[in-house]
Image (cartoon, rainbow, N blue to C red):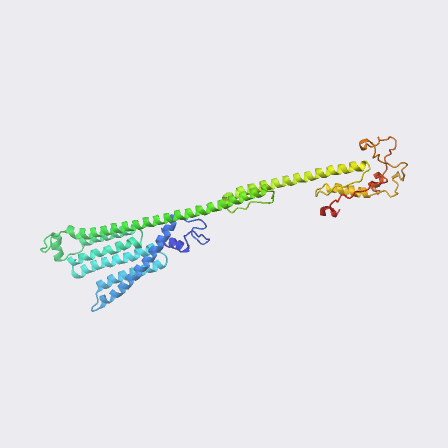
Length: 419
């Protein structure tokens, strides 16, 4: 796991807000990614605090290595711990959290190891009092549980145990320690096994406890984030359910409006799950609206055609002509043309035939049964030769028309006035 990348991702935001600069892009991070990012941020704070604490402590210990005389052993140990804490602090500032924790703890372990080796070389061998220094390895092992990953305590314990066994065997020993090593020390019963196993067991126990603590913290955080994830999922489901309920209620309102004749009502929903239903409903309403308009238009045309037929029938028997009302359909053109044709009266103009006045102008026998036209080429019938420039109404219109009754017809529609 890259410490820098995960920490940067957490600082940019892992609580569900995604953006173009987010390492997760526009996708929602998984709970594992959120857990790792927040855990890395937590360890970054601890590394910074521990590093500052070690720097302060080592700064206070530097004078003890210089006053009253120069102590190179102490100065070397203090310098190792100080350098390790300083480098760890800088790495942590650069967002390399895991390397920062390992460098800090390794510096502390090197300082302890330097103290043991340098003290043995200075005094000619390890002494019984020097065995207590091995117990200081427990401190970085325990700190590893909170500064690095779960593997940290195990790794540091393995290094410290290896150093303990190797140094206890290879380094020179003082006469007192040799007596204790051989079991001949008069003041305490011991052996070589005691010298090695006691610090090794302490370090192993510290590593085990640190690993268990780190694992329990990790499990607790996972459980907390799982609960948070469940709560977020529940809130999301409730919000989605609310959107669905609003969308369904809106669709029901659209159905009710259409049932009351509001054909212009349309469904508009915000829930993505209901968008296909709303689109299908709107398409269905569009088609039904067109069918309804076509049906109404057809009914108006049929009604007007029937009224026109009755008006013409009355006109045929010599009664007053009552023009039908306009319908707002293309059938109004027929009504307009009938009005124009009726107003085109002859007024003394004799229809022409072959450039000469017709001998017997055509007339309709309005009294004939059923308005029958005289037989072609029969008595009283001659086909008029109508010039192109002569209005057709002049050739076929009768000499006089029955009066037009006041039917209260509506004014001419706007779409026909230009004609």
